[in-house]
Length: 146
Image 1 (tube, helix red, strand yellow):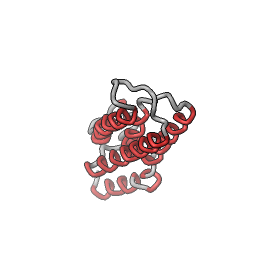
Image 2: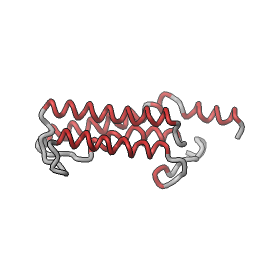
Image 3: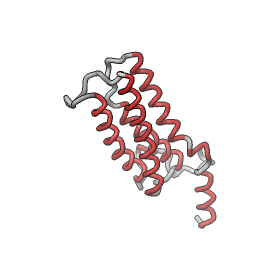
């Protein structure tokens, strides 16, 4: 593939709709998490912060169809973590993170921040992965084949 062909492929992958996939994924999962906590305020949805954090980098990577650069990976992971921490803060202030915790940690907001940290590490792994695998089965498939 020539340099010009590579640039054309990259520019097709950088369309605005593709760039919004990550924020849309994280925001949607965060909204579902918030709705669930209003439905069951004493329940703790332990993995929600992790899913919110990882959704942005995973969706971004799957839309690009290639491993991301360090700057792209950092931006995606930071965006997912920001959405997760904002949802955690809003739920904690509303009193909807009062349920039990996994590790007998001080409280559920602490656990949510811990899960966000795990999500950051996982998100960095997802976005910088160089080889194909089950995680991104359609990676390397051209737009014409999709």
